[in-house]
Image 1: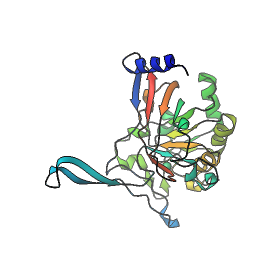
Image 2: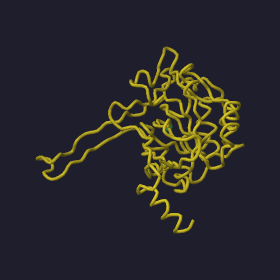
Image 3: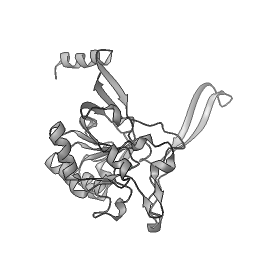
Length: 262
Ligand code: MN
């Protein structure tokens, strides 16, 4: 890339026709976290917890700061390939070792908001992807595939997680669609608005949690808990999504930004 191109980007960002769209939700104690089926005795991801150390007071007269803790997969967050058993043997597959180039990539945004509203268990199929491509052109290799459901617009955690007796009901993937994206299209990764990249009923799919299994098994990354996907064009946005550099991290809360022509 030439310096001129880079400076043109900087000028674009400084009021020259490129706007920044924040795709992240605010991390707070009420941030919803993934709830796995309890009957298996699986571990629990800590919700976000924050504790004030001082705020210009006797505990620290001139400074304000907090301690916080949470699971790596909390709120708007990044999933590294090492997150899944199928991705455990790659090299450079954790938050600290993934090449930084993989954190900046263009996006294709697939709108399944109407389908998800009509059916919370909606699953993206290969046909759905091909129909989108017939309208917008083929998904370029190295792009993020962002799955718009408008799920981030739910106004309560209850509606967002949509738990029932038989588990959560949120949109997901047919396994073949994930394989199509990783093999036929070689995407950078997959991003969703829901609490995890898989659908709510994915524990019962074959393979179990197909998006995680097949995405990370192809050494690809995930983004979950995104918002504002409705502000992005079907093609043409550039996503900036670097996770925290946690040693051997499986993911981390992430500030995800999109650059969009305005
Ligand atoms: Mn995750």
